[in-house]
Length: 118
Image 1 (tube, rainbow, N blue to C red):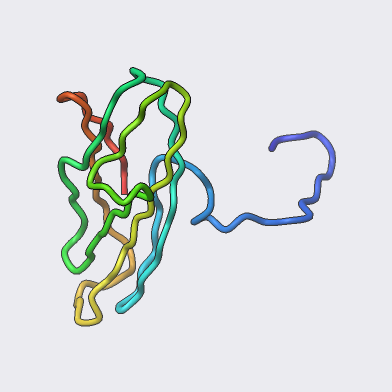
Image 2 (cartoon, one colour):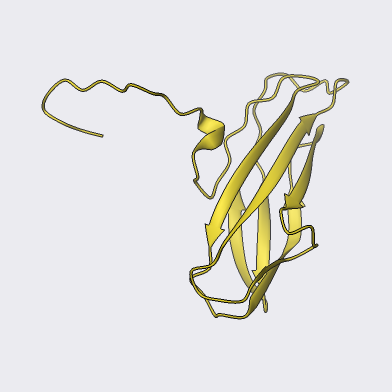
């Protein structure tokens, strides 16, 4: 928030809990972090999205867990919300220096991609 007066926050929110579509994750060797996202269907009432591809740097693995326990995120109404978790793990034997890299994952509905930066 930008204001012309002093402001203070009584509570901070860890970056992992911000509900942005993209992910910013810092992993050192052997780290494992879980991020969750809640999405709202603003498309067609009956739509289903699945992960088409996931690309992450070598030495990092990603697992997507949709809370409805299916392989797809399905919506039966507009404005319906669903939550999914993404687990990022960096291999303990990864030799790349530094905790940073870049990747993406893509959710797809009827060949319409939704590109998420990782």
